[in-house]
Length: 167
Image 1: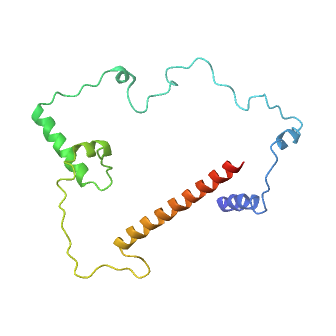
Image 2: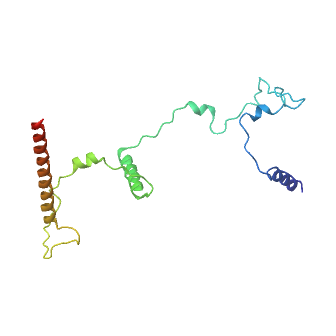
Image 3: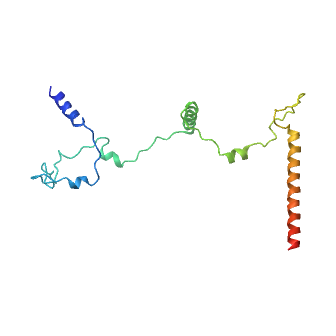
């Protein structure tokens, strides 16, 4: 069959490796003798088209392009029903990205921290994590560290003052 032969010929074109061509390579290819690149292959289309050759509109009539589309008037009740149906559909649609109020607005609308329930936890056994001081010990250790830092700072100041006084 001829289609099989054509397919085999096309496949044979791409059988070898295709290497990239340099961008300026087109200029280096000589134009074959007898080939006029400016000559028309077919007759150019005529400037005057007859009415039979005019392109036909595909989608709408030309007359309808400039007409203004008006929607029928709906009552408040109909609008409310449509709005409720749309919101219901959006709520049930897992792919609909719902808008969330801005964090600033949510913060302003919040009732404050008074509505948060606070429960005192009475632990008969203190919580102890091996290798770490307990919370009350941690506070004492932090105070001791700060006190040592202050003492070292004071020593450095005194030492500097003595050296300045000698100079």
